[in-house]
Image 1 (cartoon, rainbow, N blue to C red):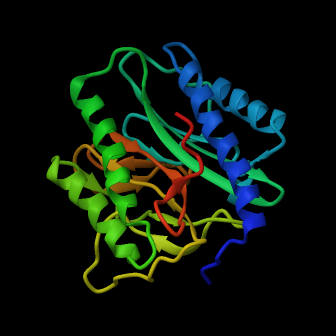
Image 2: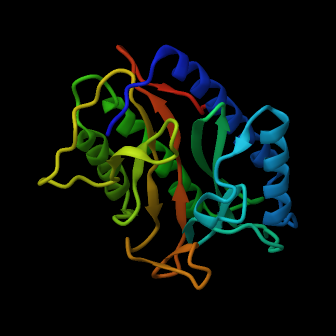
Length: 250
């Protein structure tokens, strides 16, 4: 069931969203060659807890970390470890913070030191596809309008989007209805969008093929061809006017 958030619920989600966005900003500052993904995870968890929230992902479905940290050909759900980042890597952070039972969810992909021009273009296009999509996160449009714009921007730039994973509604639960694919299915237009909905819209864009596989840890999702992937997400509040990104700090 799709839930319309009350004014009080939206205030809680604003706080969860702000802390989520601030945590991503902290991770950007800390991302450099030689730092381990486990160190980054611990810093993020401390920041979330110090700001009156709990890390949504910690223990979610058995996930061991507070942040999904995915490097290079890892698309999503990377588990923090002693692995250290290297110059030229790209790393995706997916962060969730929960405040009084309400969740924020957002993701960014950052370069580690100097990265290739093509890697930067992938990161930029992934972000661009998000902002193209949320132009349709308004009263009266359908979910498929968001999905179609994300797909259009990614594919017009020579990239591909995942089919197996998608965005989602968000609130008391991390994953609520509706599902928000990153591609348009002509057979499924999706529900109409209404004010008060909160949507976690999250393009996951691959440099090469859209095909993926799940690694031996049963969490980390990899590109099938070993090429790079990027991720960009915000928790979006649908209003009577323009959509508001609750997790957008920068």
